[in-house]
Length: 584
Image 1 (cartoon, one colour):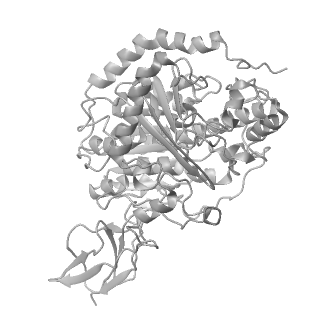
Image 2 (tube, one colour; image 1 turned 45 degrees about the vertical axis):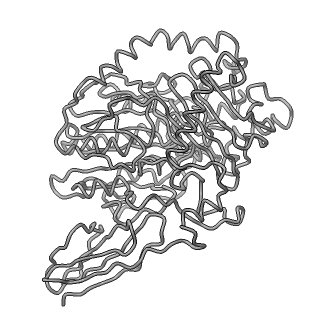
Image 3 (cartoon, helix red, strand yellow; image 1 turned 90 degrees about the vertical axis):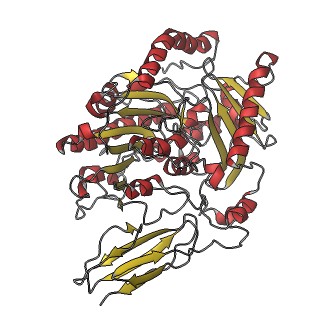
């Protein structure tokens, strides 16, 4: 019979995490100091490799969970720095990915409503994308402007369509191996094995995941379905007895979902190892800064889409060239909005002022570490809520702008997960315990406050306890400051948000066609849309067309009998038409 370790949240289970934290506090502080004070020696133009997995809580040995063996991630952590306090800005992928790629909070640019181009029949809203300020650029485009070869393999999903100027390559074949000789690169590999859909039945890995073993081979064809469970690699015994978090029931279906979760993590680790092996084969390991992280917290019910730590906290490991700071831990608070500034800082470029995060590494590292992280939840598919959160090292404050509605939203996609189906079944039968019932209460408190050190699952709301009134006031004031600073109006209806993004227009703005001229044997391009990026390709006299769009920066010469094609892009706008000029 399966034993439920978390069947009751008693004094011991609440105090045990505190005991562990107290016993490790001195070592963590020393590790934090070591990372902070050490001057990392980097190449002048280091390569950057991002290994990004989906829906990832701290389910790996490097972060205290020894359920599975992850040889590649464990090696990476042994040779690098572990960051246990990284937080996404949302509990779901697309808004969080917009924060990563722009260095801005999603709720400041209209990117926090999940799936803005779909569910329009349900919401009655227009299809739209986020609209950052005119000067804002994707971090990949900024690196291209600084001479980097940038690749994304293969998921984007930023709550807007990426301009063609954003990447040299963005496809299942994208790889640093396609760059010019000695050109520095920024390469992103996205792993989807750990996505919540990996818990659906029938269970099996996606056949497309083989893409990482066939980089650059555009003749390779893979299946687009899932393997059967019999064909899927089994990384750990199916009868493993898993510890179930208290917000989920301990039933055979939930145990099976936990097995699938860990089996998927093991497969992801295997594919991470494949890319790391390619890096070593190319002799690039010691010229490359390697990041591993998840795009938000875990995939399970009451994890994904929520802004409890289970939905926001995701593990990160960074390996620096020559194993600098190997085996250390940095416990500082980090947010996804810090990635963009940090990436620029690592290559010696000052982050632009529009970015709302701060660099935690490199030449332009912030003088003071982050004191707070912030999160937001709005619409998910066809269902809307309005929640904001702020967290310091010990406490989490949550403000519910729709207290009259319950936390649980009947998102159809999530309800394909057997564990979610179990929760609903037991709810309907009246058999959930007090912790599990919290998610299904009919209304919410206006304010929530949790001591996340002794209550890591955030089930004991301290907001009305006078002992914590000073902390409540502090974090509430910090939230007000943050909302004002980034221009986030949580009470603004989404329809009015769209009007604001489109400057009062009823339809999506269109990027104006670029002007293209040939003056003194040089091509000049000009955009009539503020903030638009200009991309171009040169078709030579033999008709050869480059794969990538070059970012226009200054007039350039082209061979005779060539054709220039150009297009303008403003994020959140409809791209311009393509214009051409022939030198024949």
